Amino acid sequence: MLDSLPPGPQGRWRPTLRIIREPRQALQEWAERYGDPFFVHALNGPVVITGRADLIQQVFAHDAADYDAFGKRALEPILGAGSMLMLSGEPHRRERKLVMPMFHGERMRAYAGIMQAAAERVMKSYADGAVLSTLDATTSISLEIIVRAIFGSEREQSAEQLLKLSRKVMSRSWPIFFFSPKLHISLLGLSPWDCLSSAKQELRKALQQEVRYREEHPEHRDDILSLLMEARYEDGTSIERDHLFHELGTFLFAGHETTAIALGWALYHLHSNQDCLARLEGELAQVEPDKPESFATLPYMKAVISETLRLHPIVTEVLRVLRSPMQLERWELPAGTAVAPAVVLAHYNPAVYPDPDRFLPERFLKRSYSSAEYLPFGGGHRRCAGAAFATYEMAVVLGTLLSNFSFELLESKPVKPVRRNITMGPASGIRLRLHAKSPG
Image (cartoon, rainbow, N blue to C red):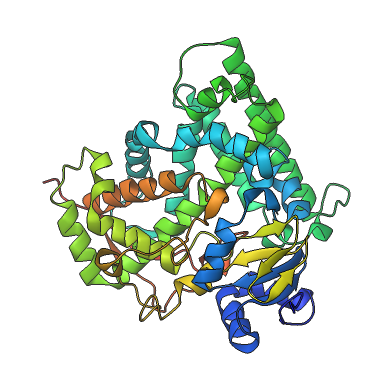
């Protein structure tokens, strides 16, 4: 006889706050106490969580039509109903097929020059010997990259305005907003939610003006916005304007902060492990620095990026809501329950990753891992559409920075991860002292 739900922690507020503040510690503690899988009744819905590779594989292989997006009541007012992250079933498949070509193959490689130029421009704005917040610097780099990739470089003033407004939206995105719609509270235009809504409206207005300009000045452009406006679904129709704005907002939101955080962690771990840094710099010395696309082909560079994303995955859990009941081991999960492969449990499994707390890029040179063992961008039919773009950007930016600058880590204590919104980032900005390298 099947049981309906596995055991788990009691209450809703306390488990949710623990997941927000210390997801890895909370999930590991509950897995040890209640077994794997376990159940959490979070503020944004009931969730069955697992870190076991066999169950993760089952979740990813399950029929996509049986899943809905998780946390729609909390996330849809932030991202928009037309965001691919909020779609499910056939609309999600259709949108994904439209968007994916813009982040893969030759199209993606064409962004290498934008990525290198942004990294050089931001870092050269600091004086030699300056102490910088790494996260501030990588955020500036990554945001400029995604804005330039989306809108091109044709209209400098417009791009600068979009950069400014995107930063404003990010600064007002409180983590709790992503977990509980009950805190989406308006109060005479003065509440934190009102401030976020106002910033989003400003960004939406700027996006509308940019789209209107493209419509009034039609010509061939190869940026993402132009490609989206020209793209057609299988039935020959174009993307709806609301969906276009929601996708652009999602690209700006999800397409820069996650990569900025990963770049910050990579620099932190490399400068905390000088042998790893020396090995990567030796590899970079073998390629031409003015061919940034070559950075993404280097084996140890790929291993450094993979190990960074293992220790600090983009999201801590991958969530799917069941539209119909699902059997998961001896549990019969009812429709409306979410199933969540826990990335932080899988990535810190000592049976798969010996000494899991250590930064050891070499582990990715010695063997490969299944999609149920290594899943920094999720998996299955909802795997992050921008995964290839993100890892490519990390390689180009890291290669550019380490080829042109040297850094001294100034953190006296280990830097811990804390919640930013959906993602986890370093508790400090990761302070580094910057020095330009001599040419040649």
